[in-house]
Image (cartoon, rainbow, N blue to C red; front, top):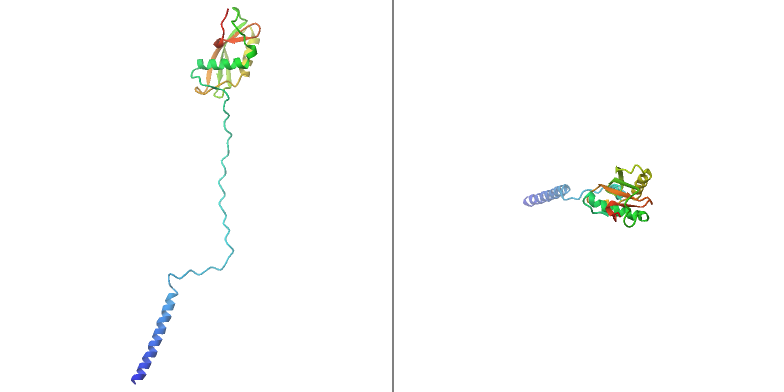
Length: 180
């Protein structure tokens, strides 16, 4: 009997090993390291890139004045403005010393903005006996714009005296050659 018992035991042992192997295989199916099941093949996903942010609206650069004045006071600026008026009216400047009696003398205040444009004109002493001279001076002042931009002051109000000869030629007190 002893042989039969051994055979029975060997058979049981063989069944036990089989059971252990099957259990291990079943547990291996629950392993954490097992790769995830693959999804059925699909068409590749289309990746849509986000729209770029809108470009900033370009503002045109502010125009820069062509002529600049480095004057720090209205009195200093007056010389720049007088030179500018002379350059714009070169054919109308009385050359040499003015005669003792002038047809008209007027004192004018001119407001100039930061770009050199005339913003206002005011008579401090108008040659009211010669309205045509007043109109001509005002027209000449406005036509000479833009003036040198007063970059160190931002804007300026300057005053100059117009010395008018009966010929229609003039000098500014700032650049006068004097009188006889």
